[in-house]
Amino acid sequence: MDLYEKLLSGEEKLSLVGLGYVGMPIAVAFAKKIKVVGYDFNAAKIDLYKKGLDPTREVGDDAIAKTEVEFTADPEKLRECKFHIVAVPTPVNDDHTPDLSPVEGASHTLGKYLTKGSVVVYESTVYPGVTEDVCVPILEQESGLKCGVDFKIGYSPERINPGDKVHRLETITKIVSGMDEETLDVVAKVYSLVALAGVYRADSIKVAEAAKVIENSQRDINIAFMNELSMIFHKMGIDTKSVLEAAGTKWNFLKFSPGLVGGHCIGVDPYYLTYKAESLGYHSQIILSGRRINDDMGKYIAESAVKSLIKENIAVRNAKVAILGFTFKENCPDTRNTKVIDIYNELREYGIDPIVVDPQADSDEAKRLYGITFKTMNDVKDMDLVIVAVAHDDFVAYTPEDIAGFYNPSHETKVFMDIKGIYNKDNFKAPEFDYWRL
Image (cartoon, rainbow, N blue to C red; front, side, top):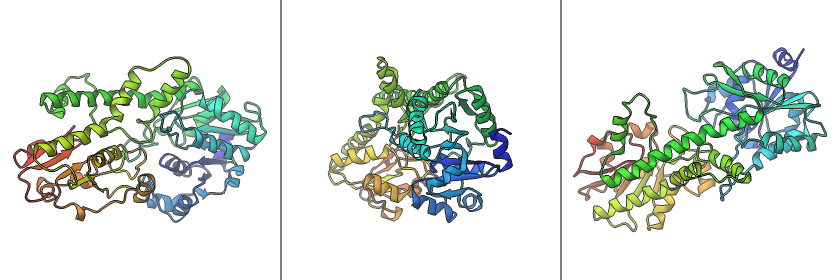
């Protein structure tokens, strides 16, 4: 009986190391089929899960309350498992170099409790070579076991899109890989339990790592092109969204939109690829050019806001400004690596102290990471400028009359910035509004 069959029979367990936006939904999905131990070093998070609460809102409180996942902050429980999935973040440092400390830390922890016959699969997005060259030596060091003899490894890049209710674990093709054919077969069969759209068997672990890191790099480059077009068209006095809608009628036009590129994937993964490339003597041109454009968009938006205030003869210093939305994407509580903070910080450079409202965001996380305390929509009144930065459903529902009510009634023209272009521009015409969107 192989490991896959032992998991099905309940003789062996699967562990999920890291229970965030990616790991927790995977654990819940597997627990419908096999025995699962969900481990995270964050005891407070584990307590929430045990109470049936889902702070990520990825599966919902009801699913957490009903799941058979054995949630724990005790790493000793990992010793009971034979199939391990590591799903921890892979951020970048301030200098944009990879920060491998989360994946290294998870490897140190797991290694201490690794037993013979185990299979370890990493899901964290990394540059090609990290699984075999960085993680394996740590596992061997901590466990005293030999990879390829006592335990096997694989890689299956995460593709969960936080806040996306359509592209879920069950509906997307899952890339899987293993250090040898036997491992690949086990990994593929195990993931087939939850990846109902099927699995794709990559040629090697490095191929799977590379496939993941270029997925987001490709998207990053395309959005950078849209952002550059937006800046050009603004200088021409042309509405970018109207241009893209016209161009989108061609069958092979790629439908991307300009915007802020944050979060823990698209704004991070390209740096992993270019870091590895530079270590091999190749200096990226296209990828890093796209990154520079996207990283500067918050500053560009803030500068455009200031120019709009000046145009309407509104004093910039101490202007009353409201930023609606702070998360890195719509209808998601995640504020990690949000680029809205760049707009906020840049406005402060001009002597403006914006208020921030976000009914969807994790307020504790925002306070901890950025020192920002959210206000409520009741505080959005008598404003000189309103910026809708994130397309939350809460904000999409606002009518032009609702938005007009946020402003100081003495302003003949209301300066309104709709970053994502979620409203019909024809409803915000001059002279009542000075409407701006990317």
